[in-house]
Amino acid sequence: MRVLIVEDDIALAERIAESLIQGGLLPELCHDGREAGFLGATERYAAAVVDLGLPGMDGVSLIRHWREQGGDFPVLILTARSRWSDKLAGFGAGADDYLTKPFQLEEVALRLHALLRRSGGHAVPMLEVGPLRYDTMTSRFSLDDLPLHLTAQEQRILAFLMHRAGQVVSRSDIAEQVYQRDLEPDSNTVDVLIGRIRRKLGNHRLIHTERGLGFRLAKPVD
Image (cartoon, rainbow, N blue to C red; front, side, top):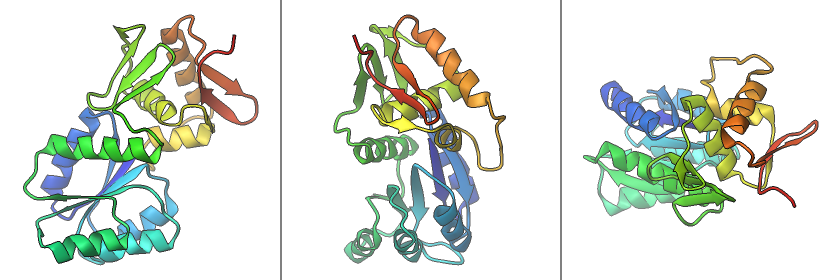
């Protein structure tokens, strides 16, 4: 799933991005608050990571701008500021979580996965649909208690479907969550990847095609 990282320390932003990739997420980098305001209002992100001290527009103003524009994706604040007044301002603007520098890079991914779970209505780290399980803390899938080996794109698609289990998601929704915004996939690319995932799921008919609408991950109906 796509995550926008808004951090003016380029080296730190790249380290965070690498950690998120290892955690099965698709990060995009932005180093200016004003540009991030435009991106968050016009692109579809599953979550965002925001530093408070940004050029162009500070982090608190940025989050408030997104919320005023109708953006409801989870936002994790990263900052060196540890005063209660700064935390209060961040949460008051609409942030969902707050992490003070210095921090372990792995914790960013863990907190984001927790925010994504909650935004999808899931309270526990292990997501399950029939015999399929997705451990959001380790970004690992299993089927019938055996490891399920997926490519990076297949993993992102199946993770997105797991978070939206029972809901119909369109091809465009899937494409937006597994490709960078400057990459436009071919019209049948999502269908090809869904077909590959289905083959790896074997006889378990968990991915249902909703004609003219998209796909739905759910237990087979007897």
